Amino acid sequence: MITPLTPLDWYRRALKYYPDKTAVVDEEKRFTYREFEKRVNRLSNALCQAGIKNRDHVAVMLPNTHPMLESFYAITQLGAVIVPVNYRLTDQDVAYILNHSDSKFLIVDEEFADKVPREWPPALEKVIVVSNQENPSSFLSGVDYEEFLAGASDQPIQAEIDENQILSLNYTSGTTSRPKGVMLTHRNNYINAANFLYHLRVKNEDRYLHTLPMFHVNGWGGVWAITAAGGTHVCLRKVDPERILRLFDEEQITLLCGAPTVVNMMVHSEKVHGVSKSIPRRMATAGSPPPAAVIQKAQDLLGLEMIHVYGATEVSPFILYCEWKKEFDSLSTERQVTIKARQGVEMAFNGETKVVRQDHNGQEVEWNGQEIGEIVARGNVVMDGYYKQPEETKKAIRNGWYHTGDLAVVHPDGYIEILDRLKDIIISGGENISSTEVEGVLYKHPGIMEVAVIAVPHEKWGETPKAMVVRKDGADVTEAELIDYCRERMAHFKAPKSVEFVESLPKTATGKIQKFKLREQYWSGRIKVN
Image (cartoon, rainbow, N blue to C red; front, side):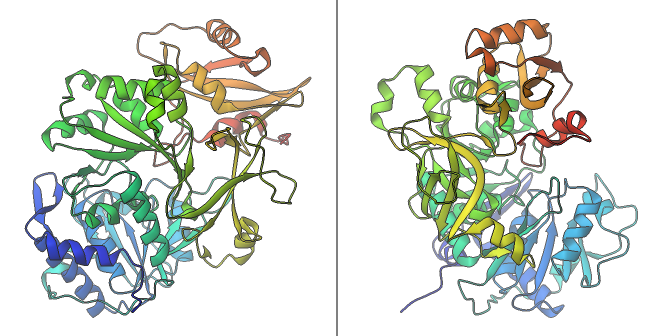
């Protein structure tokens, strides 16, 4: 007897065994799993009555609130496809996604109403608006979310589901091109959430803080995994480090996820010293290689057990994690955090991941920590493809392997360590320089809050590293000081040749620094050497 692999089966299990347990906390609102189910069922029935059928697309543009969680379960149990929209994209990209995705309905928070195009895409039939008194809409007309639910039945409704049908259509945030719609199946989501459950050690007692946007690859699978264990979802409308740290104690948070920049924001918050360390807490971080110095601060100041994970939207998104071994406990603190900064080894359920030479033969690099190659993956978490873009799919998946575009080395113990994105590697005078390696050194300087290292043109060397630095408040660190600091700690050719001090660095919705935006001013009208 074979049943489809779908995270909805875990939802069924949670309702069966934990009906009276708190499922969702959203500011003053509390819902048990039984109450959450009734709200989910009302939304499903309302959508069905309004015309949504199996395999139809429903877009959602919501912050990390209870309607977002409800949408994930209500839309997908109909067999429909959820299209989580990044509300931090440009208005043009939002309009493109709504049109390209063929979404029939849109559920949107009133705060983001101004991003909804005034001329709806042809396929869009209805807009459902979640009221937000703090940011009332000035123009958007649509059905009120609570009114939409009020007239619907709270009885279960679920379509027949094939595990290989699309569960979610997750758009990448476009950089030099339009966002691409990544088709992730029920099976993809189930296997990824299984990795989340196992490697992040999710338990029934966990209280999970949604610091990571749920629109970002379905909260990395957290929307499913926490429910699978019967844990408690604690919603967070906005990433505010002071509020996060306050919720640590108020809501007894035990688990969260976020980009290294979010970790950096927390450790530099004025509230960091007031957080109790009596509750063991785990935090998974990914999105960009976390500097070892930031990991150490999170462990020292907040008592966080940092778990480094790695992946991409196209792989649902997890494929690697930094597995901690007992033998590492005897190492120095500096050595431990250096190991934790590595991307690590394959997760248990997703399939195979390796680093291959860039000679198109797919041969694995030597495990010597020196030879550079590209990370590739295959298995049950690899996407079904890009929606309506078969040629782009062929470029990404070649000879049965998804090519990530990330350059890495493999250490003798098999641990993979990313050096850079292909587009971020700096080639100076024929030498490869990892921008993340230079950043890792700079993050150890006491006067630096944030840093991004990019390639800038150079007449003699082709390009050289430049550091864009956000100083800590009150720090008076100089360009010469930082250059000398790097030259004392690494090969001189790797050290930045110039430093620019800025107020802030451009970031994606999940906190990843957008280096392409920093490079634009230097490479406009020129061709980058790599």
